[in-house]
Amino acid sequence: MIIILCVLGYILNKINSIGYGHKIIGLMGSFLAVIPILFYILHYFFQLSFFLVFIYVSLVIGFLISIFFIGLLIIEFYQDKNINKQYSIIKKTKLLLNNGFYECQSCGNKKVGKNDKNCDVCGIKFTSDRLE
Image (cartoon, rainbow, N blue to C red; front, side, top):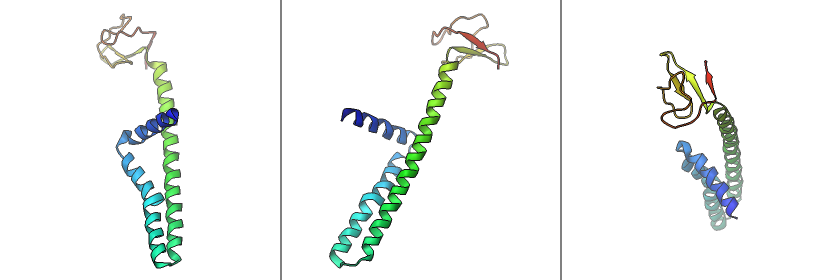
């Protein structure tokens, strides 16, 4: 149970990392819960069958929205994995700049000299230079 809550918390944090998580959850919740409940109550009082059709249409829309955003979330996780892999490859390098100095790829310090073996700011030990 704790693992499920941790994963759910991570996913919700990931969704909300760009500030629209509450809108996605609200939209899905509206089509998957609020609208169907309202139409069910209307169907209960008025006994009209087209309210049931609206319930099913709302549920289908809600599931389609959910599948779409889950797909986007999977794509975002895949991109983050690739970015983290690329960053871990270049993390301990220094990049040659136009002004003759180097930039530490770990912290962004742009005052690293050619013969420096480690960064003065973050203390990381360089493994190689990048001359790109």
